[in-house]
Amino acid sequence: MNRFRRALPVVGALVAIGGMTTLVSYSVQLYRLFCSATGALGTTQRVAADTARTAARTVTVMFDTNVAPGLPWRFRPLQTQVTVHLGAQTPVFFTATNLSDKPLVGHATFNVTPGRVGIYFKKIQCFCFTEERLAPHQTVQMPVLFFVDPKMATDPDTKDVTAITLSYTFFHSVKPKGATNLARFQDGPADPKLGEALFASACAGCHALDTAKVGPPLRHVFGRLAGSVPGYPYSKALAGSGITWNRSTLEKWLAGPRVFVPGALMPMAVSSPVARRDIVAYLRSLAHSSSAASAQGAARPPG
Image 1 (tube, rainbow, N blue to C red):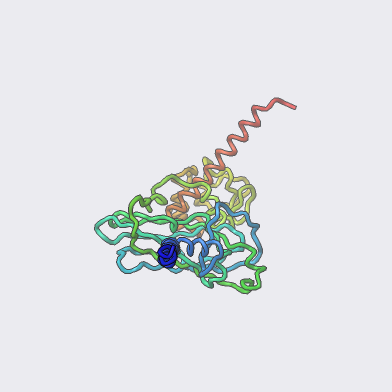
Image 2: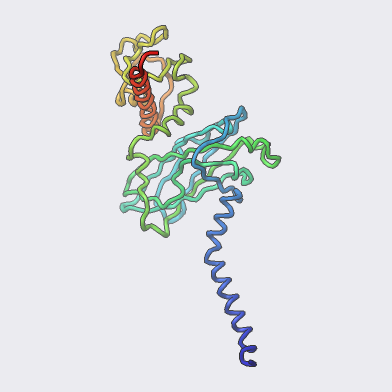
């Protein structure tokens, strides 16, 4: 019995050490879970979709990119800042280049400032949740799809925020096994859903789907002869171009309207080839939806 009593402190110490070791082993994961749940230290939230209503209030989102020592990559945003409505799904693009002669795997960390808005900054699509491989001297463009929750405007701690900085830093990965290919965003199939968000962000100021605004309606643009919407005041150059809108011609038009059709009036271009690809995929999906709806209507019996 005396031996057992003398052993109790030793056993207790061993249990305590084991408990502390386990806690330390999981502390990083627990800390990350805590930050993700609370937005602590500007940790953004990840969501499957934008379920918020778009609000009238706007906020300016600025972008900051860095590469840690030991990773020979160049990493930049394609835009320095955007002004968005709270609740509006917004796509932005970043570019990364592997400057070395061998494939490398990086991992991006991220946060927003001021840190108190982290819980309201919500990402739908991003490159920052996985290990990412980039081939030697390869350059890729990759999207981030996000929105800022309108609840930010009603929180006493955040209602005065007018500007947010989203910061990324790429580090050399310590767990490169099983890394995904960063080029999937650029070389993979077109994404009509992302194209819809891009259309809303880049095109909807001048174009609607079913009515003319500054530009002609675009729901049925795929397969349409350029300059053929009745009553719309096209430039002579576009109206006489003889172009039929398809994937190739639309992508060339978005890349530089006045280069593709000298004398055209449209001043805006879409700089990202990935964005152009996805916008065209979205417009094409509208054409397919319209064709399917027409076929379904024709198949219905009269009455």
